[in-house]
Length: 244
Image (cartoon, rainbow, N blue to C red; front, side, top):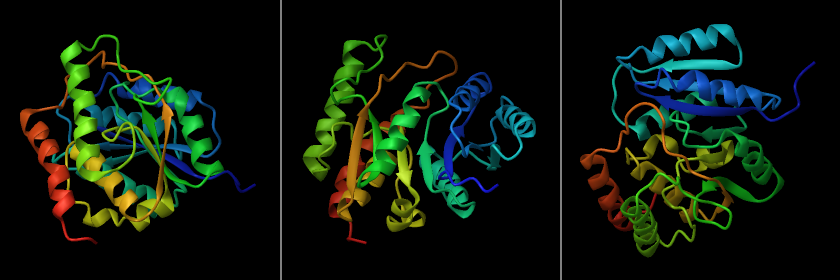
């Protein structure tokens, strides 16, 4: 029998996440949603994450897939590669999720239901709508920086979303096609802002559902000074870019 449920692909980029990856794949599988798949996009992790991903795929054929890339060239490039593969393989919905367990898998069904039951083009897992929150472990200056970043982005680009820098999202496949993935220029965390900007610029609606954002337990953060600088400059580049 052909599964009539929409095909949902959760794209999980990885770099040195061998401890976290089996946990997040297990949590996604435990959701028990029909036609739910995971695509791991590994950037040639030196800690062997790619081999862990291959083992998970071998254990769950048809449900878990792996895309191996030969170099680490940024979160945005990894997501573009994974989303493109998901669309090529017939995804109806593509979910972005970090591998560090900061995004609550339990909210995935809510995001997908919100996406498919209304007119939203994309649904964000938001820290800054009622019911959402950031990790209790975050020091005050990190919380202030995050809040300022969202104010800064919205002041420049007028996105009208509470969590403009969110990285936990559920996209309709048609939205990803409409915003032309292959021409997305940003990398790092500014990728999230450019994707939102392209969505809003095309008159499409962004919805938000509350999440509690958790701090990673294992592994190292990928937020470098260079990534922070790119993120600060990106809204201005987008504002003055030629409309596409």
